[in-house]
Amino acid sequence: AHGAHAPSSFWCYVESIFLFTLLPLILVNYHINFLIMTIMTVIAIGMIIRYAPAATKKKPIPVRLIKRKRNYAIIVSLIFFIITLIIKEPFAQFMQLGIIIEAITLLPIFFVRRT
Image (cartoon, rainbow, N blue to C red; front, side):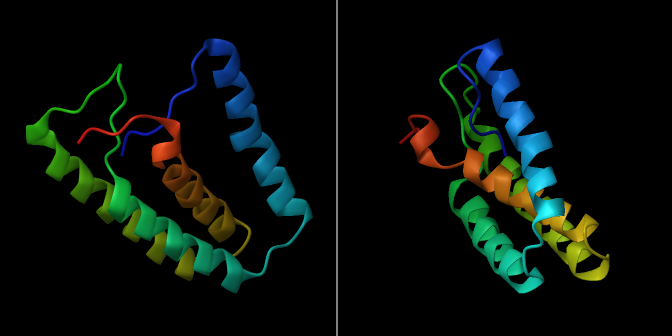
């Protein structure tokens, strides 16, 4: 779905450590209600439907690929969401967190959108 990228390698490391290490640790140590996570994931899928794919200045998306990438992002997110309804916690919450993080990186606050 493309999305935000850090402006430098340093900030990429900081962002990666936070997103892929600290957030999952918080999720494990502070149990978040499954219903709350599910609602947040549904909202995130709505954001993916609205904003995917998100091009950056350095990596623009060719017009011919936009619809295909949008459909792919939506389908993959929905498949992962359905899987989270089947598997047990904490794995379901980790997958939901991944969907939420992906949706956040698509928000227009991270880059200038193409019109």
